[in-house]
Length: 385
Image (spheres, rainbow, N blue to C red):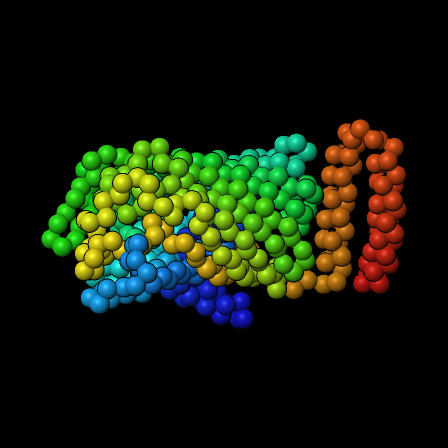
């Protein structure tokens, strides 16, 4: 009952305050090359916000007719991931943006994104994993091309990406140091679509813009916390039209921490810091957008992207459900079989190691421990009988 109540809480707050992420195994912005096991279902949600007071460019004292404004952006989505097969999972991302600085105030609902991932392909003695992803964005939101945020064209967008992961311990990958690399391509597919619409004026895109996407993530896990560091961003291959707010390349650095109070619930806290994309280097038309017209002086200092963003999120495992109650003997039999399989994998992998004698000594000790556990299990089973 407690788990169901928390699930409802996560869904509710994920719908109200959340930050785009891509589900499945991974960090805040970086995908792991591993996929969910078949039948696994998780919900991820994150809160994201940014605020800034406007200033005039090149002046230390504001003129009498200038009125400062407090701009902010609260962005949101929820990611739902399901393991279809052991090497294939699907993530559905219904996305919501609160306060896009448009007259409707809310995009509810916003766009929906789909992510199909084929992965968990191990190599290098299971230290390395590879994966491929196919992604789509369905334009179900009312407003697009909003300020301070990554570009959304309002068209049907698509792309693909590859993921490569390294795990220090191949037997307990989630409990050892791990590193991830994502590289991808994205097409905004907006040619001919109205990208800017305000003040009774509409401007249509003259071309399809596309971008190269990248992300690098490092994670150092402990029993209760994961300490993580990421860098993610884009570099335009074909830049959008000049009336698009976000036509600069960008990159964020994200230190974060994950708190793991239980096996089925974790909490994320992080901060995105903008490293690339602060300066307007691509001759963006600053007189067209309606958020500049509101000022008496057009020389208003506004960033291309949010210069910082706070991340706060919840991750909840829904399936598999807790197993039905079992007797002590059944639990011990299951645990014994699990350990036998584990030692068998160790024997198969380590037999190929170069330092055979050292590995054999370790295996002998592990076998002796297994034999002692077996004797204990036999006594328990005899008592149960």
